Image 1: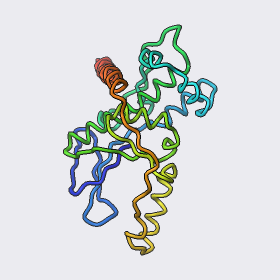
Image 2: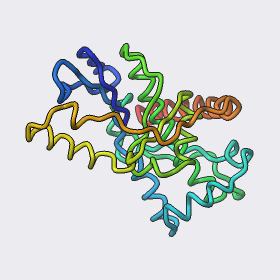
Image 3: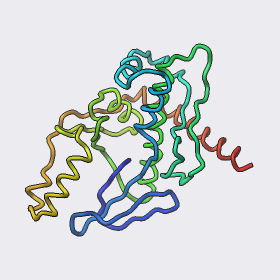
Image 4: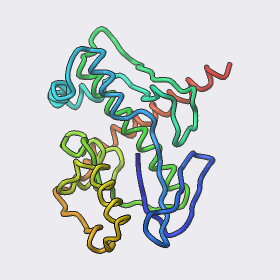
Length: 227
């Protein structure tokens, strides 16, 4: 998901952007939510008899041409929320041939998930929330490939932080500290920046062409399901 703190309540139900009260006073937050993200990679690894580590190593060996010619993947294994709010959306592989490699299909899964994240980013921006940089937290923060692909697709700096791979667990611990009465300044310290990933203009251009096809594929599937 994408999580952003705001200074005002900005609901956007037309694109299924969440808006809630923040735990800190006088602040709000918005979220764009995907229903299947990391679980898509876990599903694909289970289906093809490999591990996430091994698959990511295979994907890292792909050439730029291999990635540009990879199949497409719609990551809607559980329907989708932001921005489609479509419980009947389904996962799709499209564009496979006899020459398609497992690594290319795995790459398509990663790319499709980030295209979904980009859908959410655009929904947040359309709601009036400017976003110039994002921090990557959780298990994905361990993967340089994932961080670079995020930056290339989102076209903004992606920052990893020291300890950021702990993600939600650290956030839950901090909430518990606040509930126990510890001061905000002592609990919510700004994390140290570990690395900053920036978009490659050439890769971004190629990926935006693929992103347009990704969006068209969903719309065509939606049209098919409505008949």
